[in-house]
Structure formats: C-alpha cells, structure tokens
Length: 86
Image (tube, rainbow, N blue to C red; front, side, top):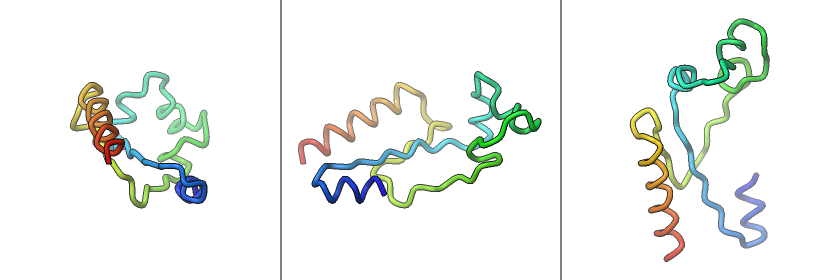
C-alpha cells in the first residue's frame, strides 16, 4: 500500500528488507520480548503470535545474520547513492 501511495504522488519509494531469522532476533533481543511472548506474558509480537507479512519485492535485502551493522549501513548508502544518480 505504501508503494502505491508513493507511486500515485510520483514520490520515489525504495523498500529495504532487513532479513533476520527468528532465532537470531530472539538471541539479539535486549528487552527479552521474545521470551516474554513465548512465556505468555506478552502478545502481538511479529513472528511469534502475530503473523509476519513477507515483503513482495524489496529493492534491497540485507541478511543481518550474515553481515554486521557497519556493512549493512554501507550497503544501504551504496544502494541509495546508485539510485539517486539514476
């Protein structure tokens, strides 16, 4: 829906999918939200008890289980530089 709204107003739209496996998200969870949801203390956490809606056609996909924060940020910057020149 966001993509279509941008298209209607002739505004560029670039979608970045930060692809991180659920196990990695749980391991990185500083607030313990995944554990609390699995224990029944919270509800509505995407991927646990709330459905995850996969992106249909992102312009860029980053698998953060394979690359670090600095590399991911650099990839986004390179991508934006390339897109803005085009």
